[in-house]
Amino acid sequence: MITCIRCTTVNPSTSDTCSQCGADLLPGEGAVSRLVYIALGVFVAVALSGTALLLLTTAAANPVTRWAAPLLISAGVIFMGLAIYAGLYKTPLWQRYAARARRHSDIDAQQALSDYTEALKLAPERDKLGLLEGHLATAEKVGADDIVLPDLLALQPAYAELAKRSSASERSDLAMKQITVFEKLEKAYTKAEDKDKALITHLAYLAWVEEHIEDIISTSPSKDSLTSFITGVPANEQQVIRDFQPRYLLVSQVKDDRTRLVQSGAVAAIGYCAECRQVYRLKASLNCPYNAKHGRLTLVEYVLPQEVALAESRLRQKVSERLKTARAA
Ligand SMILES: [Zn+2]
Ligand SMILES: [Zn+2]
Image (tube, rainbow, N blue to C red):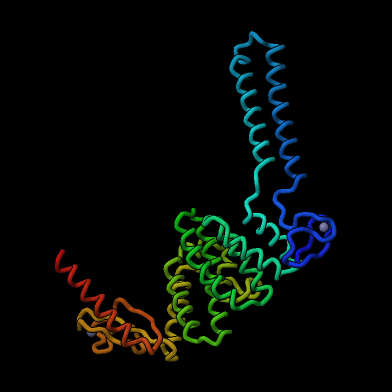
């Protein structure tokens, strides 16, 4: 249901105009804000050219006046032009849907959801991320699991893409968002009783954490909150760990988590021994199961138990390709 922005009458979702007052139910930028833009432009333009006139009448001979007056007048003209542009700018349809979606997110989440969907269909690529976040938040609010899952899956690559062209501090914000997406995805799969996908998501999450440790560590403003993120203990309940080393803790947390999964049999690990030239399924340790003196296996991968055979042949392929390139070089 669409609530009229002018008279707050509730209209059916299919209406274009308000049944009570006739107002457009999908309005662009309102007349009032347009008038404000133009008034502001006029005000600035008058102030700038007024100053220029004052200079010309009181100090025409001053050399400063000669360059300052034309400059002030051109600035005034530019301001006026911008104000007129803002006043007459036609609001694109996707922005109108997005505005109505935001307006309805608290009063009618279903309406907000369908407006976000429309906005997403029409918006240019670079504006989609914010809409997708709104779409997801609304879908979560109405409990639309069938929408939450694809939204989360779409957000992951969108954040990753954005992170590529972001500054370090933006990247750490994005890292926190990615972590939330991973957690929600795992929860969504668990809720849908898709154990395999939940596990795969968890493994992907661990790999992602390993790869983005720097971004994650630079996120937390204080040692306490970072400790609590890593240890899962609320900041006010923990004694601050002395010589707290976030990088070390995070790495060992990932390791422990994987070990736990492998030992419980939920996940299998495979790796390559360069001494034996063999791909092995790992047992309790990361060392070569044939001869512990061979040390750690490399190229270790974590997969679902039923995928071991496939993953092993993929790894063998990878190793032989690497050996080939090594020989060629
Ligand atoms: Zn109305
Ligand atoms: Zn070996």
